[in-house]
Image (cartoon, rainbow, N blue to C red; front, side, top):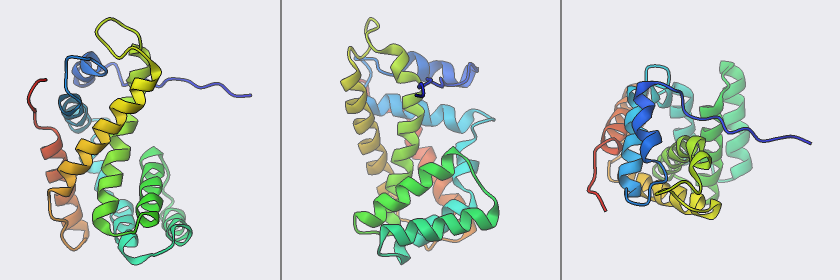
Length: 190
């Protein structure tokens, strides 16, 4: 029998504002998401632009357009991971996004939406459980699910507003940087 541990965001200055805003009832999901993306891009250890720009993830984007069956996409992606001797949470999120995007009809555009949505949900999930029931925050665990859905939906909308070029190492890195830049922009308060 295992136990679940809540791995909170790092106790570094870049993550203080997202921690202060996450789950607050008076702050829109868009603004909460913007702070999460800003922290993930500014924190030198997280460096989300560099991490999402990894060639293995770019390869997954190409696989999303080329494969029709989720199992085949997973098998091909796993082969790339094994060949490159790459592992880690972001690559697991990439696998999940790849399989889901192929299952839903495929395509690179769908993949990038799923990838960025998985990423924001992960970062939000690190801190949300710590604030359930706190004054001015979400009041019950079911609201975590709803907030993550809102964060993911907004993320997909923003990412899909940019045209994905033919994926190469350079174009992928530029696309990721542009998308994170858009996601980091402050929105309006509720």
